[in-house]
Image (cartoon, rainbow, N blue to C red; front, side, top):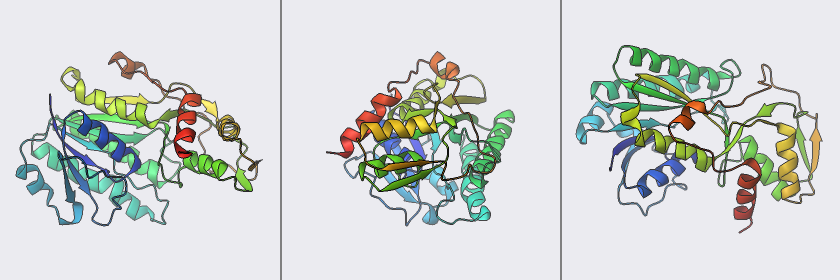
Length: 292
């Protein structure tokens, strides 16, 4: 069954992969993007895709200018990696999606799928703002304004990610044989998951939406296995046969660093989801594609 979906974040790593998957499945997508966002990840081959600039769009008119949206999927985010201050991060990660969710509820959209993080809420302004919006989603759901599905994502990776991301930075550095790579001791354990497995979770939520009975639902999305940062880096280093010198311990841990993070995927697996890529296989795929 073809669905009409409003998607944010299509120019980003996650959003672009998700858009490709949904369009390939025959769904119609209206994508809300910032006017100056680079379009390098957005394919022009899809006829069932409509792009709307956020700065030129009235949300109320957007919802009533199209036939009823079946769902809103919110993947847009601001990490604060480009010098944004706390107020700018709050505007992007709390105030904007709150306006979007209010407009969705007013237009009687049945489902709002949110992208959350598994990071500790007090680690940085990004993680705090994500948790704060989830609380608003919980409030809207309790008031039965809209069904809110919260996806708490672990450390995802894949071909074409931003070099500002830890996984991409490590892979690209090793492939380029940079002389040295400064790292923490790497004792933190993380749950790394391939982008294709992340996307399949979103797709499944849409597919199973009629079976989701509660107004607020939360799913942890990860491989279900945690490895140390050091193991991850050393695996990449070995797979790329890199000459890069790994300086473990050269960097301090961040204040409030999470030392263990691992998804409990039981609820998601109960819907029929499973992780296709183990870490080694996923990394081999990325490295192979990077060399093509």
